[in-house]
Length: 256
Image (cartoon, rainbow, N blue to C red; front, side, top):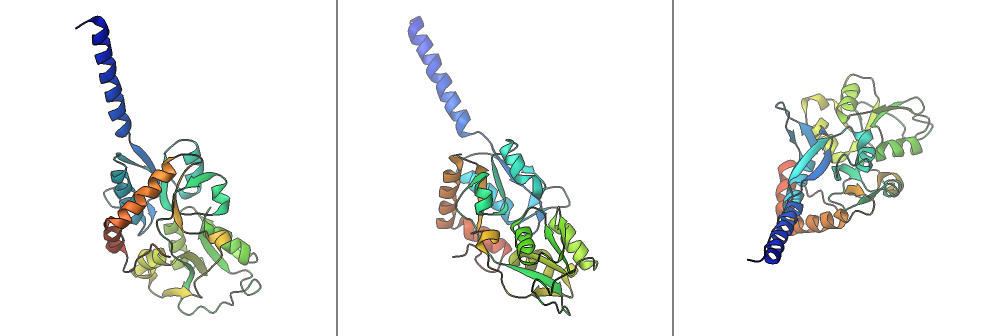
């Protein structure tokens, strides 16, 4: 073989190897691990939940290794922008405000939000009626937006983890707590910790604050958003989504 042919053969092999490496490149996924049943940390330190299973299923469709990166909620978007990971799969609602900072896939679920209070609560859910009432929400969420917008006279307490919100509600340090209905049911109301508590009021509707469903955040302009949207459609079509959904919830949470 001539030198030229040898060189071309080696170059072609290198390009093939580079291409296969690119395909196998890991997808780094930002997750929280403190929002059961969507994500939680088990006793052995592993992560589980609907969001976690979704992340692995989508990585499989994209034929990429899934590397989970834990991050507290209020630092989720800054860490994405800082390239700590490539996507956020952490029950993040798609809102106009967030779309100014990051891109989003299509939604992968959409469920309503409601307040939680003790069974004997009797609050008047108006601006005046909640003056001084202690309301707890997760910091940096659509729920914080909603409470600050509609109940500005309340004593609003902000938390870094949902587990801490539920702990203070149980201890009597909060009067009300706002949460996703399914997260509240499976992560609190249907557990021993939630005994004596129930939903308070009706489902809430304010797209400006609560968003248009939950999507996967990526850096603005990243074509990964379209790839993830296509992967969501694929797992909806082949039954993978239903299998994951039914593992955690008694109803289809994809929404309309």
